Length: 209
Ligand SMILES: C[S@@+](CC[C@H](N)C(=O)[O-])C[C@H]1O[C@@H](n2cnc3c(N)ncnc32)[C@H](O)[C@@H]1O
Figure 1 (tube, rainbow, N blue to C red):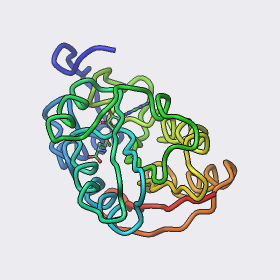
Figure 2 (cartoon, rainbow, N blue to C red; figure 1 turned 135 degrees about the vertical axis):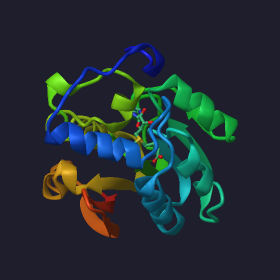
Figure 3 (tube, rainbow, N blue to C red; figure 1 turned 180 degrees about the horizontal axis):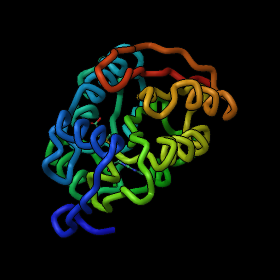
Figure 4 (cartoon, rainbow, N blue to C red; figure 1 turned 30 degrees about the vertical axis):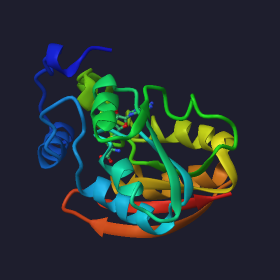
């Protein structure tokens, strides 16, 4: 994978590109690390109410959500993961223990009470992928669920008994499809936050076994 600074996005046109550019613009994506946006805020709000024990924010980005979790009384310990080395550095600078790993791959079995994830979810045609760290933060592959589904497959292994997942779900990735996949993975799903914007509705779903 190349760094955001050494890859020029290809020239594109069309509705998908317009949506992506609008989202990227709205979320202030001018550097290789995803900066806190509406979706980050919604996840942090859900974490303030529902996170407890050992909490891991997958795809921690700037580390802002993980930093908010450290102030939650019911949370004992916070860690983050991210594939992006720039993100891990930025999160560590906020005092967040961040590991550069794929999803939850470095975590021990049954070790986490609360898993949180604001995933890349923007549906992206393979021909429009732009191959940099911003893409890894935004693109959810053709159906928007290319990262969400492997995450839901992997989550049960690392969750402690009675552990929960707080997952940010955008309507762009198909709310019913994401929740249906989670149910197929053995979770019960409850929507605990929801906000609508011009391009999408964002929800935080609490998943419990
Ligand atoms: C939408 S951004 C969210 C960033 C931050 N959590 C927030 O809410 O502001 C998604 C993050 O997931 C990271 N990511 C994407 N795929 C990943 C993977 N397979 N494993 C770990 N992190 C991943 C990206 O690098 C990016 O930082």
